[in-house]
Length: 96
Image (cartoon, rainbow, N blue to C red):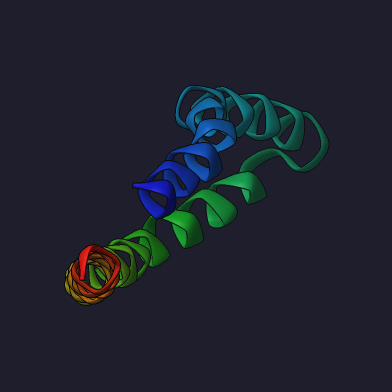
């Protein structure tokens, strides 16, 4: 549970990016338009061309993280079983 909590703690600052990123892109585009004019469209076109590649890698990363979490959960369950087995062994030894 502590490991999953750490993931949520790392996520908290990134949540602001979800709503602020589109606003920042719009502001940057307006400012670039005032400096560069029509050439700004080339930059926007480049961003749009790279977006599908970015989406592909984000999905791949998400799948890898889910796989890592499955292995991590299995490891934690095994560790808990071992520790509980040790506790039981010491309790039995203490009773006799």
